[in-house]
Length: 128
Image: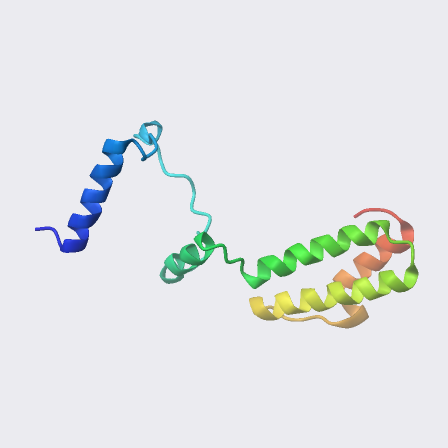
């Protein structure tokens, strides 16, 4: 016996099928589903993450990574050395935030491998 919610859902599905508002998914018949883009998320958190994603929420780590990428692209065209240093500090701060949120060890300052790579790239003009 179906619950009230199941009956309502079934009625809505039948109505949508009759109206033709459900897309044709016959091309999926017998084929595996596409890989889950949340496979790296623990199973008990996937539904919550999926709800947030569908609601347009972007995790802070993703937003920080986008900002880092944007700043690195700005550095490529930057000619002012003071501005380069300022942007490098900002990138370093954002990287630190990501590392802290991800539970990784944090390497701050000029001794970090990321800092040296960026400085080398800026001073020699090569991309690496």
